[in-house]
Image (cartoon, rainbow, N blue to C red; front, side):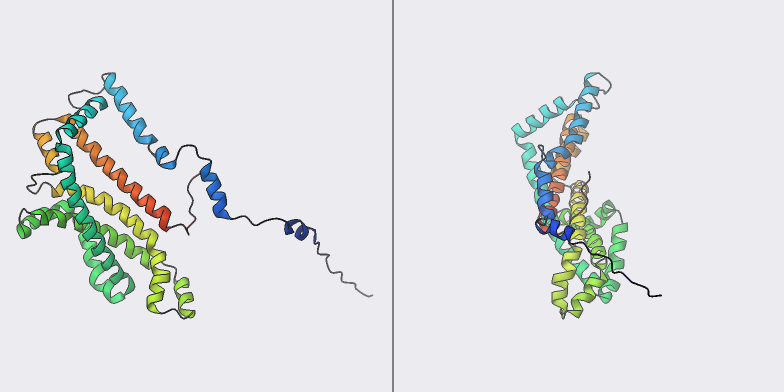
Length: 290
């Protein structure tokens, strides 16, 4: 008996249907979904702090909060306007911004250099990584007495303290990002004839950029925290000096003004990093919530 094998018929109708269809660019779809938002995302992220301030005002108005220890937001705003009118807030703020600026610049340069040395070489890792891990484990304020003994009470120990905090945050995240680069990509680049310099420029740096930006976000936050400890080193000007004076004279409204200033500076730092992420990581499609 002869067995007849029939080949399955391949329909060309789906091909005919899709022939006239245009390919969809995912970036265009994302752009359309973003353009539908009436309220920008940065404004939406401010909803939490706005609700917190509104709750604070309600609790102060109803008498649940004692105005002697927790002044209402309206009183804090009046105190801030008075400090701005006197010019003292701007003077101290500029001094603190200069210290943080120098500390961030030196810290990024130091942390990034050490991360590249340790991340790209096992020999560099042997000399650098353990020391940076130890430095991360030591509380920042514990270094204040040593810095005073070594450098005196000038600007050097203040900037050094901020620099160390920034460098540790940059190093830890960048080093981890370098060592997390897919080994398959590295081997593929080498098989295509890429040299060490091109491998670093084309594969290692783009692959570790997200980790560096995470470290930058943590570093900016750490810089403001270190500033508080740094300005306890006999600082004549700065937000920390204002905080100390307000605490000694029991000016609670001024204390809340300075806390608000620190919060605004921290949020501004986060917005800067988010802006850099949006510009430098356009190639990465990440989940952004529903």
